[in-house]
Length: 124
View 1 (cartoon, helix red, strand yellow):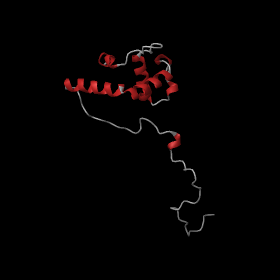
View 2 (cartoon, rainbow, N blue to C red):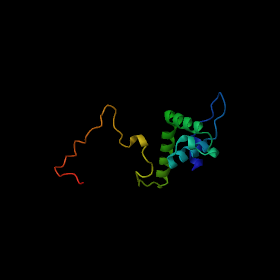
View 3 (spheres, one colour):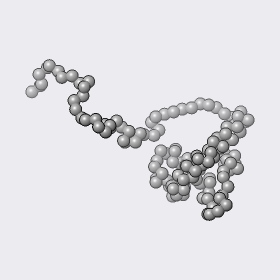
View 4 (cartoon, rainbow, N blue to C red):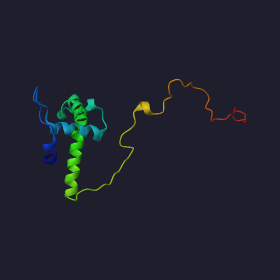
C-alpha cells in the first residue's frame, strides 16, 4: 500500500528542516484514530504527537487526503477490487464525559415536570 501512497506525499520544503518520515507519521495518525486515544498518548516509536497532529491538519488544508483517496479509489476500481460495505458501530469510541447530558447553562434544577406526585401516603 505504501508504494501507491508514497508518490502522492508532498516533497520536503525548500527552506527549513526536512520533514519527519511520512510513513511513520501516517502510522501515528492511523494509530490515533484506530485507538480513539488522545494525541498525547501516542507511543514514542511513532514520533512526536505534535508532528503528527500538525501534519494531519496541514495535509487536510492542502488537500493531500483528497488526492490520496481519489488515487486509491481509482486504482481499486481499475483492479475491480472495491467493495462498499460500511459498518458503523457506536461502541468503538465513547463520547466525552461532557457530552453525557449535563444541564445547560441557565437552567435551574427543580422538580421534574414529567414526575407527578402520588396521592398514596408515604410508607413508614
